[in-house]
Length: 332
Ligand code: UDP
Ligand code: MG
Image 1 (tube, rainbow, N blue to C red):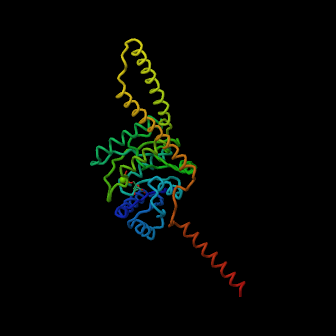
Image 2 (cartoon, rainbow, N blue to C red; image 1 turned 90 degrees about the vertical axis):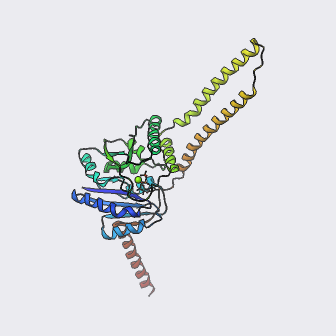
């Protein structure tokens, strides 16, 4: 049995040595045959040098170097594309996902679950704001998209080879892995773990990135927001009609003129706001259609440090040398 572990890294130079040592200890103690696939997602610190160093000491380490920062989800997909093996585990590089949980993931997999996902108990010190916004997000997406993503599920999971193969057939560019994992089906099973605080450095998910991820999640799994325009439109038409009836009644039966200025301004602003909101929602979806229709690759690789890439470079060098000899020979 071969296990691949995919680890996206964005400016994680300080965590890598510790991560590697802990992973190695757990994997070797459990007698596992493994391969570590680190994806450097355009780091600006010494992450790539550290990774190359790790590979030079251990050929079970593969390193993919992306040409710039493509984001966590794209880095995970790059790792999956180059993984192989009977099962793949994805985990973060900052040691918030404890390597010591791996044997439990594997035992659940051996019991016959094709996806073993994890549920995080927040580490002490997680801000109330982060916890509340995350919980609201899961409630909202589950309500809108009906895919039932468990609250607090993390990007730390084991996938069987079959699931990875299916995953690679998904062509969509905006990837929200937590949703896609539920969508893909198969036998799934949760494992709980206590998340540790970050080993070093700061979280790469700023508030803005979290909002983008939430938008990606909702728009890739639900078209409900698009229907809001119809809903608002109908609701306001009914209100408008009722108000018109009332105005007619006042004019005909009471002889009073309706005082109009304030209500006019409020109505105009309200309608303007709703229209802009609906346009914005439609714009979000059109933006996504635009992105999808360009068919750009999800990520671009600068370098691959792996035996097959090295073999390919060697083969190319040999064939170029041969071709050169031949042409030189022909010339002579
Ligand atoms: N990460 C990445 N690319 C990015 C942002 C993050 O590869 O653009 C990696 C990061 O190095 C880490 C994982 O994704 O291994 C999760 O990021 P982080 O720990 O910052 O997120 P948090 O745990 O705070 O949600
Ligand atoms: Mg983290």
